[in-house]
Length: 255
Ligand SMILES: NC(=O)c1ccc[n+]([C@@H]2O[C@H](COP(=O)([O-])OP(=O)(O)OC[C@H]3O[C@@H](n4cnc5c(N)ncnc54)[C@H](OP(=O)(O)O)[C@@H]3O)[C@@H](O)[C@H]2O)c1
Image 1 (cartoon, rainbow, N blue to C red):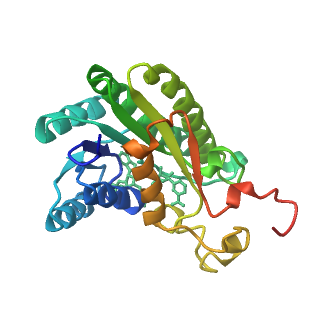
Image 2 (image 1 turned 180 degrees about the vertical axis):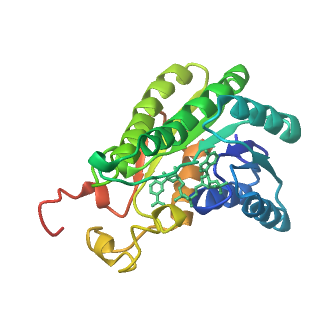
């Protein structure tokens, strides 16, 4: 069994970590559906890049927070790419605020996209993988789902839900030959965290990371590629931390 020739749907594939995942999978011969919500131009440029390197890719528009749109985009991928073997639940947003000041929309939107999106896409894709008796689902979660951060109660709760969901989905899917795992990135400079690294260029965050640097989108994509492929065939229900050691720190002093 090789990953080459398989078909993957990557949600939020237009930018940041998702775009790196699309390129990484395509490099190993996977046909990739690049999902986006609003950045059509960016998604098209990921597809162009993949095609220029000899790969196969399409763009797929759809809001993962909308179950109807997710159903339609799943059918589109199967129709246009001839099947579906891998789902990467990567689309995510943040709307940081202190709890006493958090607007109801900031709470609900983050839950709808980060957790609702994982649920909708898994529910739409899982029956296809179960029917084939094979497949891999990789959720791009966050170390924040297992740790705390001031101003991110909505984001951390959404990722904690994704982590719990990953374990439960893995239990249900295992007997059908389908694996469900999660990658928990630490800090990676993308549009999502630009506000956190503004000002000091991320210096104060870097100081708290044992590796003394932020991660790269490619390092996260490598971990996703590992969990999507046969090299991780005995792994399911796992939460794989990729964070330069950040989550290993006790936090009571200098590591
Ligand atoms: N960067 C980090 O430090 C970090 C750390 C831990 C975990 N993560 C997780 O990694 C994932 C990717 O984050 P990123 O840093 O690459 O963020 P990003 O650069 O802001 O990209 C987010 C991607 O998600 C898509 N998206 C957002 N809402 C969507 C929706 N409702 N439906 C479909 N697509 C949607 C965006 O599409 P459009 O371009 O169309 O808007 C974009 O492609 C997220 O789940 C995030 O929580 C990131």
